[in-house]
Amino acid sequence: MAPQRVEVVENILSANERLAQANRNLLDQTRTYAINFMASPGAGKTSVILRLVEALKPYYRIAGVDGDIATTLDSDRLAAMGIPAIQINTGGTCHLDAVMLQGALAKLNLEEVDVLIIENVGNLICPANFKLGNHLDILIASVPEGDDKPYKYPPMYRGVDAVVLNKIDLLPHFDFDVEYFRKGVEALNPGLAFFPLSAKTGEGLDTFIEWLREQIDAYHLD
Amino acid sequence: MHELPFVQSILAITLEHAERVGAQRVLALNLVIGEMASIVDDSVQFYWDILSKDTIAEGATLNFRRVPARFRCWDCGTEYSPDGQTLACPTCGSVRVMLVQGDEFRLESIDVE
Image (cartoon, rainbow over all chains, first blue to last red; front, side, top):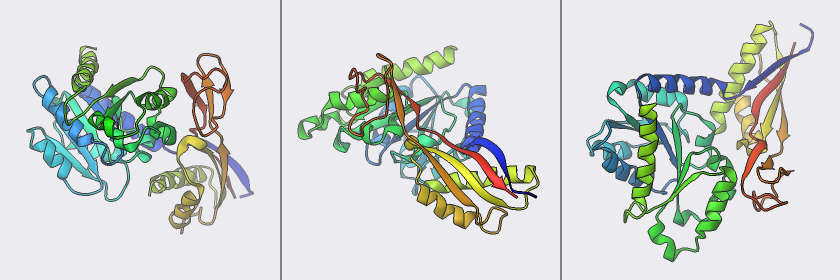
């Protein structure tokens, strides 16, 4: 064949995105509202999630999917709260992708799940690229990480539906400018929901939970 | 680590299109990568060399076209590239801005024979 150029113009992640859409269709069939939590390691994803499960459990049937490079520590904590929990060990991969979630969904009886909580791998870079098919993306930041993170990791902050700032009980001990942080977040997501809270003391948690319940209820009423 | 699944996907798309036109060999890939796409050229090249081995795309050149990030201000309409310090609008200081360019990551075309 003579040398020639073949037009492709295909998004590199289109295969993942097609699978993410399939996941979404599956979730919608069973009216399961899926929330994807992303954060850097140590931001307090699991602590925030455990608080949420505690608060939401009386109202919804909840299940959890946990992504970690290794161990079942996180899913064990969820299972200890009496909810179905699936651990995905990514075997070194730094994010969850649609294929991994598809495998986890197959292990759950989604007919009996109103809210699915997905805990992504602790990482501020890769999860942003891989759509999973969930309905809501929440990023959990924390005070010790520093207030410049939205400026340094814009792809991660861009496109999320809400940002939680955890560990505000530590604010007196850190030079963390909440307004500067918030500005960085809003630059990427005008009008974004922002919830400063402490999973440890419980401060600010009610406002966040109330907002989440509104999102979940709006989905189920739809 | 992060680039590995991307490169698997690039290879799959390449081979699919090469097969479609009955090519014997893939000479080059023309990739478009936005500044905000968190993709490192060298890392893509590294995985490409390993994964493309023993396929008709082995040894193909990877051409990267980088697209700089550009934002547009919702309030005054200015379009700009961020200076690296802040993402706020340089004209009016607003932080109500949107990314209009720079998150691309696609395979534009392949050169085959």
